[in-house]
Length: 255
Picture (tube, helix red, strand yellow):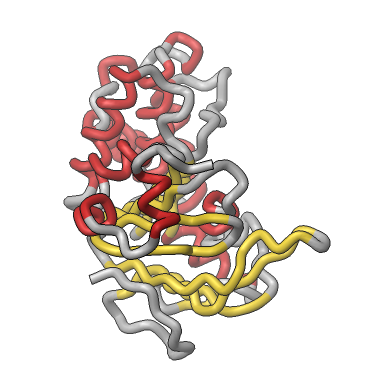
């Protein structure tokens, strides 16, 4: 079970990501306030909340795209701060799918995915290409492999980003607003893919969409002004939240 934990001990072996009293500042502004959270293997966790609540900052601290200044974060049992060798290993274990597609426009779709296992796993080009095709098939765009990213729809481009992320076989996939630029049909396809990925990956998703959280997550956290206000099983959060602030947000009476 995923849970909020206030203890400072090293997480158990089933815990892939652990935040313990994590704080983050941008100048005088405190973006994260005493975050305590653990995510275990095979779970789908959604963190939602209004814009500016700190949810993207929180997941960017996992692989140190943002540096936290207080508390500890462990990934697969390793503390992520202050040890570059540890951080390199963490970044191999943590895949990231961004809101913007960040693709290589002058490379083919196959080349976009092949590059990841070549660089991260130091595989020869032929072996990396075979792996890339496998994951393009998994996200259902293998028939587009010879095309370029600009020839794909937005939903297909996000599938390509997911294929590139999972091609290095990370333990955890972080997704930062993966559907915010997509239409409802493309969003539904990505959500279906997220559900399918649970068989092999632990997935943590940031979104402002409560309806998306309800559809794809096992556990949901609600963030507001840098705090993880409430966290629990998704069914419980949506049917019987403990706090009035959470209830107002999920029922659209927030603000």
